[in-house]
Length: 456
Image (cartoon, rainbow, N blue to C red; front, side, top):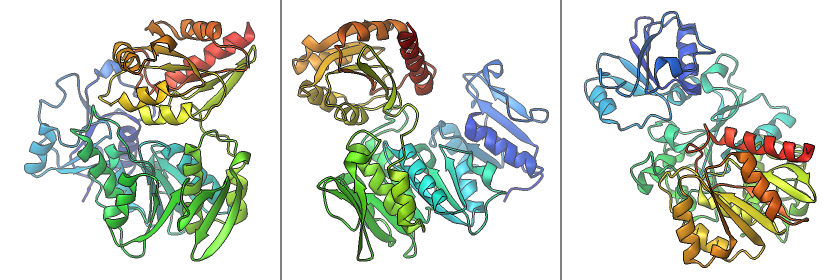
């Protein structure tokens, strides 16, 4: 139980760390120490009151010990099972997080969405569907407003849609009322100790549900489908391949089948979202929002007016008959495969970046069989590894090795090699940290350079 005299540690000063500090200070709790591996001069201190905060920073930021703190708030980027955290826990410290505190305090309807990719798109679709239906709905988690910042606004009639990562779920002890499980493949192997830990973390989104709750599960992935047996909540599914109880696509038509009622939502050809992987997101969102009280008209309007999120297959512009798409949010091979498969036009693909321990073999094999793929520009730390894999599948004739140039040079090369009627696709399959601050900066630089090409 947090009290005014609680001695608090906040590990990591990102968005959630700041949100936690603001919430605690608003409740009159001021004995707060911030731990961060950045130096204090490198921290972004905007948006928080630092007058009473203490700071322990730098590479050895955890070496001074956490055992003196009654409560420790772990930010998502901080690994849950660090030795220093385990030692503090054994000595009596309570290890919690921003999202755990939110679930303890919130008493309305919660919708949690997890998966390897598609979370942001699905969450936003659900939010917009419920909003159009007149619901008092909030978007939070890893998207929208930080979780604790909305606590004082929400009540029992509120619906909160949360995007939840494995980092947040790894020690979550309360599941949402409606849990949405998208594709669960592989990611963040530089953070998790193995694939099993990654999947097990995701499972917490459903494990604490009871018979009054709902699961909405991707039927097309075995790992996701296995979540159906983890709790007694009622199961619904979504699929782009099979007729299921929930949401599905059949012969290019999106349907909802819930409680024996079959409803046609519309045709996939009318979606503004590109790619069959987005059919999954649409079906998931339609089923979930309907279960949460959205009406069919609002669902349909949202589905066919939604253009997608920034940095997710985002059409930036057209230069000399070539369209440029920003898919910088694609940081694993599965999403790059889905992005490439969204196009039939002759395509120039930009891939590569920071190595977070993923397996690119399946992607390399898939790209070698993609007939409309005409050029592959390799960039970043993984250039050599990706080159050898693509060479293994005899795709070296498509490869242009770029190293680590500026984005303007990358785009100039794309312009040079892509013919009129083609597509340039930035879908890196990798994290960005070798060349850019994050995926947003990578995508923004791409967009800026495309606009410069348009201007010239």
